[in-house]
Length: 575
Image 1 (cartoon, helix red, strand yellow):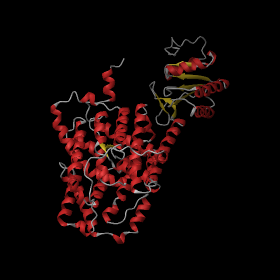
Image 2: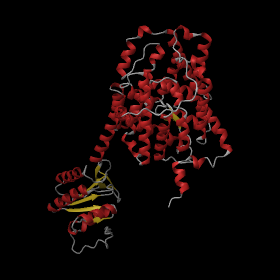
Image 3: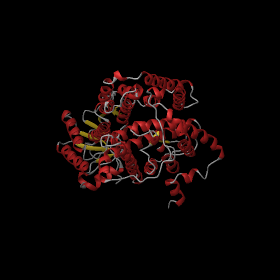
Image 4: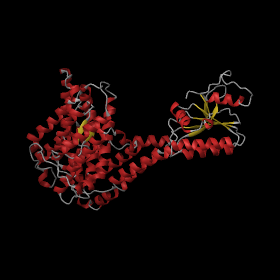
């Protein structure tokens, strides 16, 4: 029986790390918490703009979700809060259906609640594996294209023109038709912001570049009064904590948003679990529990939705900074949330002078790192079909749309999974000269017995590939009419269902009907047991422990009173 304390620590990890907290950890947590908290302020405001919301909602999304995750998350370092990719998905989900700014806000908050509930359900049902519906190449292609869309969607802030949105060609057309309205001062401020971000990341690594750029932008506008010459600034931000408000759920809103809520729940979890595992590999003092991460993220989004938060997840950049600046426990996240709280209570007047062009610069430089050029180069060099999955997701997201890109990615991932399951790797084996080792005859110089065919199938034998298996064996036999012994290597077959059993049974009958001898080698015990239970005893073929044993047996099978045991031939009779 599992002790109650272990169950509590599993579902409420704060009860594990907090009682063991050591004062020596406080210095690192304080340093990391303050650094990440300061980073959160410009990033949260910038990502709220991507989502189509006023900047203060990025700060609202940086308080309650962080506190909830600190109690429930299994990662000691994951930096939860607004991220660019999820913000873009929020805009893609809500923009087509919202009729007013008020409805846009309401639907964004409902979306956070729905995303959180889905993640909670997946976590409680231990459905973390569902995220594998998006393969890594597909996700990389989607993220790379989304990063380009995010960057281009902020260019209008750099140019001082009207906003544009949509797929790649929509944005480029919208920007192109407004080139005559570019405001030189706004463009200069934006370019200066980008330059400062790049130089700051390269030469002043001790300080967060987004914070430096944000403070510089505020100071310059405050001193020069550029906002009075047409430079767009954030303006008045309401001071105070996010109020408690129950999301205004409706059947219509739920049905409309559900497909994108599901997509955001999966993508957000993938982003969070990927960075959490990457950091955990560098700190072996704890383990990541994927299902608990779903629960923690779900609870963070649900709780956040009651305090005006849009959907959040783990951030790559803030998690890395948390670790690199000495963060030891989730207390660092609590400190980050307190930094944002202090900002909301006392410092919002400072952000009146913050230029939108500076926020756009922060976003553009940040998302550039999400474009995975190296991943595509690696896939192309490998020559694997994964490169086409990357391209399909990338181009689909760029030219068709965000929602369509996600759907295409999931469909391609599932289709490829089904195809690989239905058409798995299969080879004809031969013996390496002077050994008892058998390898693929296409890749090695091997010795082959003209009277024996050795066939290996590298997948469970089930309804999706059973006919394919039978057809391949029959096809090989037809091309080698002199073959008398059909040796089926079952080393790669870990499971077999009723359809597979039936197809194998028919195949062995056909082999025997043609006066050939079927043999099975290296079969797993579970597979042998299934065959024993399903077939009459007379139909059960001879099993051998190794391929070499079957080959040796084939050489003496016609000898009268051939004794396999005396010849050192090992059969497998453990039924």
